[in-house]
Length: 230
Ligand SMILES: [Zn+2]
Picture (tube, rainbow, N blue to C red):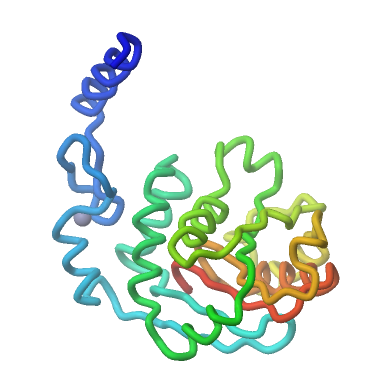
């Protein structure tokens, strides 16, 4: 081990003592060097399906063929998404992705996955991505791409500056997001069955617009797979 690497490791350990890793679900302090950002208790509850109930399939009309969400957007799941997204806890992507993988063992989902040829993350606007430092949907897509052995194409772009959706009514959301996306690499999705990836599915306005843009860009069937659903 080089000296620089040794020092980096030492500094990392000192930083972990000052800012210990915390569970993304209940905020409990975790042991230094913890591999995943979920504590043993929360992991056990999630394994037993007791963090909350799950809501896997939500058929949606229009451009979106089907929506799969692993968990409800409430309680510990809601807290976990907020920490992942707004508190810079990028490392949680690995655990959230694994959780999505663990709960999605239904027939409908397996068939949709068999059919799916590429994962496409919902993009952030450039300015917002610069502020946040990362796109949480892309981090999730990368983890899921590995777990499901599917290619990931970051090929959607926001072409319109939109207001944060959380403050808007369902009608406001639909209007705000209309024509906001464009496919930047049509060859990545042309005639392909696409699985859109995002952290949460709320009114579906964003996912529907992404699906519309993907279809305009030549994609075949578009489904969506999110960590949580409101
Ligand atoms: Zn916990």
